[in-house]
Image (tube, rainbow, N blue to C red; front, side):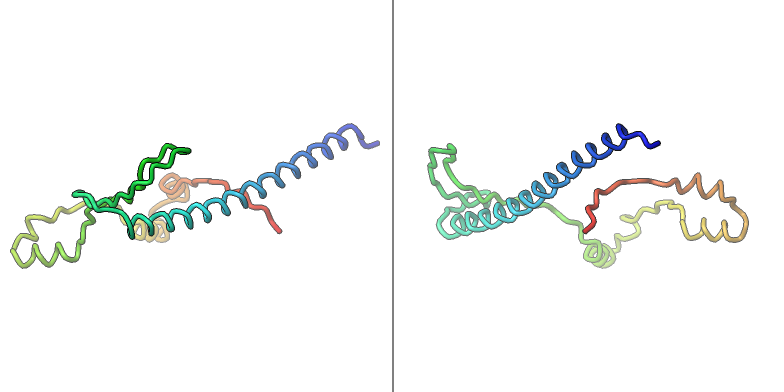
Length: 145
């Protein structure tokens, strides 16, 4: 004879999780919608700053608004610059100045293809490979439709 109290608990848990799934989907949809709206508004604010703001000596663009509700005194389109290494260009410059050998360092790196070749040749065991390539597990929430 089936235990009706267990079935009732399972039904109750199922209803609870269904409610949580509905909330999760609603919140995710709201977040996606709000992020899109935020990005659209940011674009319009940036356009105003670009069209009417004044550049600073640091390259920012400032547009005063003195908005009392939020306490915002001005919109600042802040310039953020970073240096990105252009390896191809550096190679060309260093070679042309005969500095390439001086500016190159050799880094020892294990070759995964060679490791697997050694395994297929029978020089490494399954246990060796398992220890060198441990499984990493991550989880994703998927709501199938």
